[in-house]
Image 1 (cartoon, rainbow, N blue to C red):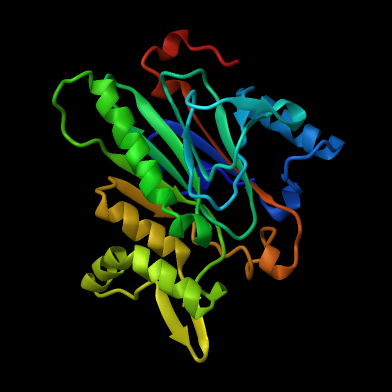
Image 2: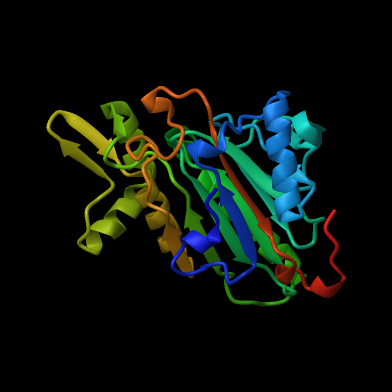
Length: 276
């Protein structure tokens, strides 16, 4: 299972830990099977985080902030959103918890934002093409901006900063789409494409013969770059052609785990923090 040690530089500065499962780690699609329960218990034991929140992705672009909506009991003691959600945010004002997504081919973006009062917000968004078109990145950033504003209690402050990790997903080598999908993505993220062209690098939608290929990690990178993210890193591993991960486009039915949580170092009163 991959973690922050696989990056050349820990962009989260010890404030966030993450896990990305590989094919050899088995299926992480939430279920009542004994196999899934054993995997979740092993995750809890390894990380020391007992509360796990697993949103129900549904290509809606919706982002939920912890405490704003009811969570319901799921298999293996995990908590699930009552309705579909393609993003979830927790803060250091909340009880420690890990956010978990089970994905195959869709990358996710793990985002850490600084709030006022030495607090932090951690969000994960499911970056399939449909949630991207539905504005999942905008919804995440707007939610974090509101958290930042509320944390200031009326005081003036500079714009908060973000750090972003883009996890493995289907790459531009393999993500072929039709003209309609390409048009929808280009329409919503045209500014990101113009910025990337300004830097004289390849845009994220290109033609290869009669194929249209899309680079979703680059869309996410450009988007957060425009919004002043302090550090951005991408794991740059294609789930389809690498053979390292489950891939629906390769015919797999299983899903990979992406999970992240705030470390005790992130909490203002870290010496008094106890895992639950």
